[in-house]
Image (cartoon, rainbow, N blue to C red):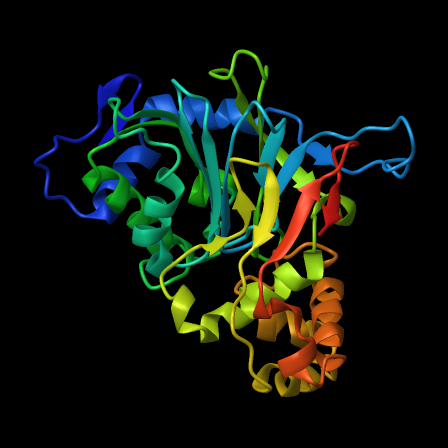
Length: 338
């Protein structure tokens, strides 16, 4: 059930479609005001300092989420959680206002919404208590495709539809999506105003407090195991065990990354050979749903993925995604591979 400003937006018996409910949310004055306030916040840049890992140095305890991943974090263990690199995707954050448990996902398809939201809520909604969830925020999606047959609109509609049908109470506080998060250049190309966010826990003692802020992450903070996790996003589409699911990444209870495996076949290496020979503009057109809106490091990141795939010819023996990859938090706040 969806609430805005403390009141239910739709009756529980409403049979309206997700697209109709989405439009009502986009036009709600409370959410328009909240979105304007969100866009006025300076974008935070998340980076791991070069000195991290040296004796006496520490870094912020953060959890980063790649596309199609999710993580549920305990504010007693983590200071911030977030994602970026979203254009036609949706970044979603849901927090339990009583326990402070917070789940973040980077959704890229309507097909993963039903099960994906169930995954997010499995550790956030306490079945022993009335499930009342705040900071249910959808942000970071460009309206390059706002028509029903495009990318963003169906995804946003599906998220609203599923939230409305669930029995938990969702207090929508931020909805910086579609036209609310779009700018245009002189040629009419659309870009997201922000393509990422971070949820900051105000206090690790008072876990019910926190806030969402626009953010970008640099390569040093998109960790751990950046390249393997990027590859997993791509190859998981050919693994039936991940159909309709978000990729499991993080162990909430002990604050460690446990990157679940997925199957991989030689086709991906052959495909990487072909893509690596393309020009930068061709890679943008082949590999992105929004080639005009991607960040400056998009092509470089894709080429790094291609290189990794090409360099692992004996895939049955050497490719790392045949078993979970585990990273523990180090004393300075970084990650150590087990």
